[in-house]
Image (cartoon, rainbow, N blue to C red; front, side, top):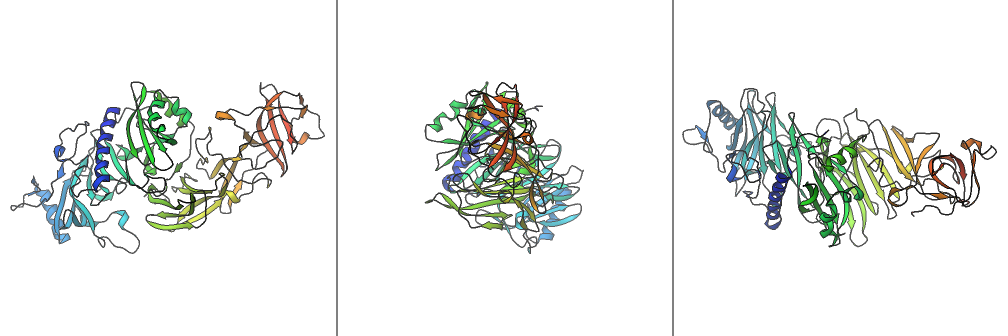
Length: 619
């Protein structure tokens, strides 16, 4: 069911234009200390005047804010007696100069609280510490990213820009915003208060240049090094969030096939100029706010083309370097806010019946998911040692919260990492790690859990016996029309894949078979079935048609062969589809087939003998 729009296409266009202007400044000459390109805290809208994109900027603590001689204001703003008491308490507790100071009733309980930054003023930035004052007293704060084992709060100073703000939401809650100092990238920090106690929100530290419009939409700029396919080149990309029910949510995404995308009015025109420059589509994401992000590459540079519906047809509203996607996996929403149009129907179709989490991570790019079940998402990043001469990766490492927790030195055509949820009831997420060669054959497909600050291997599908020990899991379908995912993990401790020809016999050719597994302390165990669903797609997913070149007997069950009575005889030239498989030996396989008109179905034993005029094969 669609919901009311949180953000309109014209508003998106204006915001993205503003974002691209900001990114151009960042990429051209580094980020200035006053961050003049920031689209939220802007001098022209600091008092709440409406900006050109229809949003309202929040009031900002002025640069160089100081308490005046009379002690009744801070940064030119009058302070109540309650606020003055909080300011005095912070000055006494910190024993430093208060450089930023913002008071509000943050948790809407009738009691005002204050956040502050204390320390010294440097050349264009502030150096010091974050403080909070409320009814329970004062306390020094530190962002989660600066609290590794063995450190205490305040041991490491912060470097902030000389500005801060109070962000108000429609439900009466407020949040304190500040931005770190930096050359080519910064971090936005966002703190809230609950029951009088300060906490760092899930958006805090995840991106830069936090923006908020008048509809409780929030925008973060993601700073990445993915302009080039080799993991170099700085890019800046918008990420989209909304605030509802006292919580932050990220507009969700679902993958589209090229066929689904190109079936939309105007889609071909959106990408034609880039295809003319030899860019090709890597992946396509439909977002819950009505955007389509087309990630493209020319094998050297990456580019995202953002499209939206305008008057019933797709139109390009922005383009930027790098690869775009969701940012904070823990808060991704499945709700639709993109208006009533063809994209809504496609969104509901793609999300109907989909269950489980399977989110791809990009190399050298941070993602946030709760891996250990403590309620706070960990920062996850994987890196590969890419060799430009051989076009191969020489190894992979995985970092959690900035610390390397797993690595492997082994050459591969590529390494891939996904986040999944094996057991939806335990509150923990897991990682799936794949290593593959040029022919897409996998040499590892591991499931990893994060325990005691280390990654633990739960099992490796590449080492798992399949089909009663008769087959090998050496390659998996990269796309499944039924799943929309590489692997289906519904969250009940099981997973399913479409295995590529685990038992090969010349008489049948290539095929895919659906195999399910359960993970336990002993690794993966394949779930045994009497028969396993097969699919043999040909062009554009159409089922392959087998044409008999001789009279062929079919039986009611595998057990009826070879001495039983056939249920029907297939004449030369008759055509069949594959339905299911039952294992026999390493060189024999039972296959259930059906006439193309659906009139009869039965089982036949396949061996090295070719029984049909043409067989499917894809390497």
